[in-house]
Figure 1 (cartoon, rainbow, N blue to C red):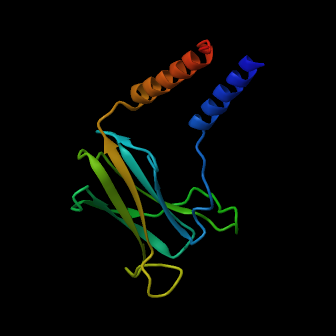
Figure 2 (figure 1 turned 60 degrees about the vertical axis):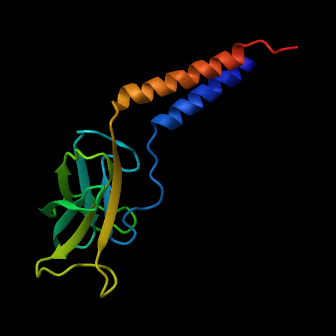
Length: 170
């Protein structure tokens, strides 16, 4: 019985450590920004892809502003929005995408702000007078992600196994 519980706990932990969970709807407001490292640390020198999404068909392009940990603007990109035919499941509207890719070298918290712009050069948003601006941030760390994560996981499992197999003290 004890082995079944141990195995169940290990399988449960493994499944949830590998699964990517997306909570809520990211396009509720009609605008969203995410990255391929959203919510996790970025290894030094890794390529970061920031994706801006909108269901606003009047948006022509997205202005991406990349800031380093010191708050300095490092890169400014303008990307035309495109669609691959994907629709937003909540209301069936077409989703438009724009991408910006860079390799941040400085260690620390970076920020990327996306400005959604229409053909007239005006910022688009759902509510008048507000700039449709979404920000995503990430932290660049000097680590090899697979070896570091695998090493930490193995160490935890070995410690857990040792604790379970150790005979109780009398």
